[in-house]
Length: 202
Length: 202
DNA sequence: TGACCATTCGAACGTTCGTTCGGATAACAT
DNA sequence: ATGTTATCCGAACGAACGTTCGAATGGTCA
Image (cartoon, rainbow over all chains, first blue to last red; front, side):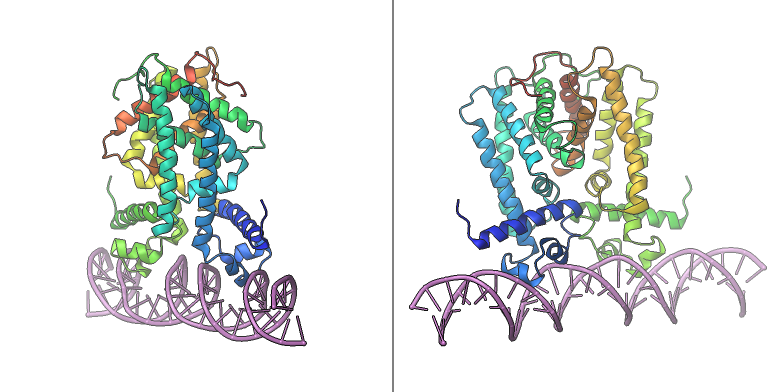
C-alpha cells in the first residue's frame, strides 16, 4: 500500500495523539501537548486535522473499523458456535493488547464526542455488539443458557474492555494466555449446566 | 444522626455534583455548571469546597468508604466461600444500582485526581481489590481453579463496573436479577471442572 | 443595641484553551 | 524562471476556565 507523505504524517499524528489521549485523557490533553509530542507546531497540526474532536473521531473510527474487520476475518470458515465465540474473544484480546492506546481511547472516551461524530462511532459499536450477541445466541441455541444473552454479552465486553485499567501485555500473562483464561471463564460460565447460585433471587 | 446546616448543604452539593460529573464527565463539567444545577452562586460553592478537585475527591472517598463498609457487613457471619463470593457480588451490584452516579464517577474518573488525593482513593481501592482476591482464593482453595486468581478478580470487576455504560436499574432486569446472573456466570465459570476451551494456547 | 461569625454573591483576575490569520518556505509542474 | 500548490509556523484572538476579592446579608449571643 503506497502512502503519500500527507497520509504518513497524518497517521503519525493520530498514533501519537492516541498515546497521549490514553495517558492523560482526551479533555485534559491540549493541542499544545500534541504539538510538543509530535514535534510539530501548534498551527501546523491543523494542516492535517480540522480540530481536536475530529482527531479523536478519526482515531476511534480507524480503530473500530480494524476491530470489526479483524473479528470478521477471525470467524471466517469456522462453524462451531463455541469455537466461533472463542475466536472472537481471542481476537478482541490480542487486538487490544497490540493497540492498547487506541483501544483505551475507544473504551474510555466513548462519550467525549457528540453529534454526527458520536453517531458514526455508535453505529460501528452497534454492529460489533450485535456480532457478539449473535455468537452468544448461537452457543446458547441448542438447549438454552441460564443467563440472559444481552447480559452475558455486556458482561463479556466489560470483562474484556476493563483490561485497560490493569493489564500489561508485556507482563507475566501473555495476551494469548489472557484470552484463554477469559474464554474458559466465560464459556464455562455460560454453558455450565451445574448448580444454580447459592441464593435464589434472579 | 443530627446534621448541621453546613453538612446538609455540603452533602447536597456533593450529590448534585456527582450526578453532573456522571452525566458529562468531570473535566467538561465547569464550576458554573454546578452553580446552575445547585442554584448556588459560583463563589458561594467555595464556602463548602476548596476547589473542583476536592469536590471530586470527597465524592469518591465517601462512595468508596460506603462500598467497603457495606461489603464487609454483607460478608459478616457467612463462612461458605461460594456464598461469601455471591454476597460480595450481590452487594456490589445492588449498591452500584442504588448509587449509579457516584459509582460511575468512581469507576470512570479513577485517573482524574493526582497527588495525595489520588493516593488516598487508590489505598481504598487496594483494600477492596484485596478483599475480592481473598474471596476468590477461598473459593478456589480446595482443588484449585483453572483460572488465575488475579485475572479472575479483574475479570469480575470489569464485568461489574462496566455496567455504568449500559445498565438501567429501572429497566427490565432488576439489580437482584443482574446480581444473580453475574453470580451464575462467574461462579460457574470459575469452578467448572469441565472441558478446557476449544483451542489450546493459555 | 452592638459585636461576631457564618453564609452568600456580583464582579473581576490571571491563565489557558482551541482555533485562526497572514505570511514564509519547499516542492514541483510548465 | 515562473506560477501553483503543499507544507509549515510565530503570533495573536476571543472565549471559557478555576479561583479570589470585597462587600453585603442574616442569624446568634452578650
